Length: 249
Ligand code: PEP
Image 1 (cartoon, rainbow, N blue to C red):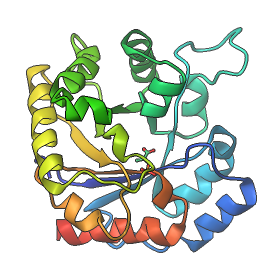
Image 2 (cartoon, helix red, strand yellow; image 1 turned 90 degrees about the vertical axis):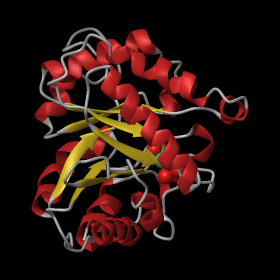
Image 3 (cartoon, rainbow, N blue to C red; image 1 turned 45 degrees about the horizontal axis):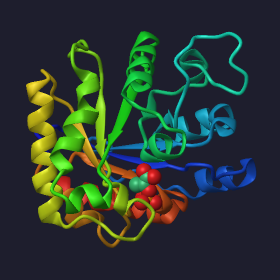
Image 4 (cartoon, protein in one colour; image 1 turned 30 degrees about the horizontal axis):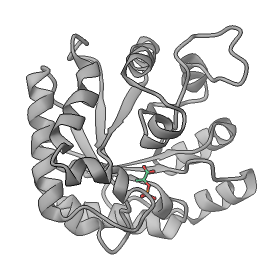
């Protein structure tokens, strides 16, 4: 871990999940084996935030959202505001996920507005960064991460933040970064955060599953995982939580 006390295992359900199946997911969740060592977080689609807030709270799961717009309210058809997420019981909000950067063309200017708006209502951003395969192969990983982290320049270091390092080539592909790549890149991210006056947890994301979670969580500088596919089933999510708890023990 990067000097923190509790792993975060966060599920990102993306555009998956209907009400009945999500309630079945909650029913199937087993007890967190060590809540002091692992925080369980799920970020479902917006439609499930209100109905899942209490069932998740009862199971010790912290609620997060997958995205938001930066305005508080108004004529922004189809958007969701930070205040609405707060009102639904969210603690976290994922910002800057590669799918939003690549498909919805979100860049630093917009992301800075979203970060500020999240902080304004007391949400903790889970800020995603990561390089594409061509960038890694060209030796540009650190430059890309530095550019993505530069949105934090000048922000108040006391405001809560979690960073998720997610190599884009490892998301949903079944490929994971090697423990060496993870340790090396997390060291760079922690260093860059320190240069920006920040100290925060840095999660790894990219095809984390029950089979690889323990070795990934054991890497120096890894403070948890952001999990896509493997968070959709309660048993695989709980196996990842258990793997983190073993590493913390
Ligand atoms: C993600 O979407 O943040 C992610 C890491 O997905 P997966 O675990 O499916 O690669």
